Image (cartoon, rainbow, N blue to C red):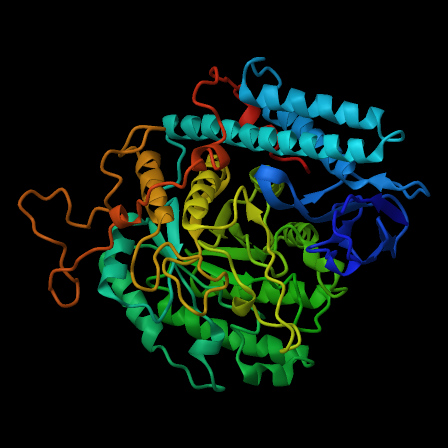
Length: 582
């Protein structure tokens, strides 16, 4: 059993709540364990022997409320100090990434070096007083944790900016890097015009539940409209997921066969065949499967999950040989396997796909933060950068889909676990409670980190517009009233810099407005509808450019200081980790 000493200032034990708390084994896979409080101790009773690490949502001062983890710890009678073990892991992670990225030679006056050295000194001071003054050690460890997370995020962004500049200079950027998800029922012409102007591709959902609400009765109306429009605009489309066993996308009538795997496989085969055959001339990339490894709603074992994956991927390849097959992972940090014994840890699932030579062309990673549901609690930038490095080590191109809310999510927006008790809405936050400004800065940081990775082929925002069926509430770039958010402006500005339409890293002087598709044609008027021919007032990002809150630049800074001395990397630093296991 692991024991952690905590410094919870709450006098009422009922106020102590563990959020997104789980244990991990030496393979970094979440394991089942009993977690409970006993006075000022947190007890973790594992069901497996050996060293384990602990992870949980944790308050980290100005860095926010983030899911953090400890190093692997052996069982012992004496309790560990939780804050001390959290900062120990973060310092270890910084050392590992500096070595992996070839960034040990940072100048002494660089902000990363300064914060890292301060974190290290505070950590040593905390260790020195650990036995004589536990409260002082806890205070020092928490201060060290803030410095360490600050420094690690700055390190991740500094490394990302170097690799992204190198990727642009060598012409190694993908052809279609930036995309957005769409909602099938949002067909306003202003939306479509803005999609054409500001994105390289769209992600078109193809939910089985909406396409075939009743057995053998398909309704193609909405999807046909979107596919025909994309074809006219010559806008690339990633279609799917074709199969997801999430209750929000699976028809009710399918559950009749959930205990008959052979029949379920036949239904999956028939559905994929009909959809791909209909749209294969327009859609060239297919997210064939999404989240099968979570296996939360179907009683499938590992062999059956792999069989379904192989069947679906081979079928798409047979029907559309030139198309790209993407297998998408949800909850890529894998915390779900701590509570679901039928699930497959994401890393194990990917390893099985590689070992079995599945006919897939790329991996998809679906990453959402700020929502108090499994797999969507807040994470910091270094964790996400490290996650991308881990999955890139398998040598498959990556397609990343991300989302974060533009306002604090309330319990009214989350389904109650029992239908009566209000849901716990504390999903964590990055730097400050979620707002439109925080969402915009998080988007810019994540897109910078993701596009710097050599094997990342595309990054898409999950929803272009807010709508009630969104996976993460309030995560759209545009409100339901078609008012752009600051995140939209930042995305447009980032894409302009990425594609060379503006200098890097300065913001383009024309980034305040999202250009229409006809901009650049001298004497042309407003863009017109490709359907009606009538002028359209495109959604512009200028409306989204609200003044920053006082102090926002210090709390939500682009954490690499502009005054830092330049950094250079060895030629092979960006690819050092590829081809080996993390």
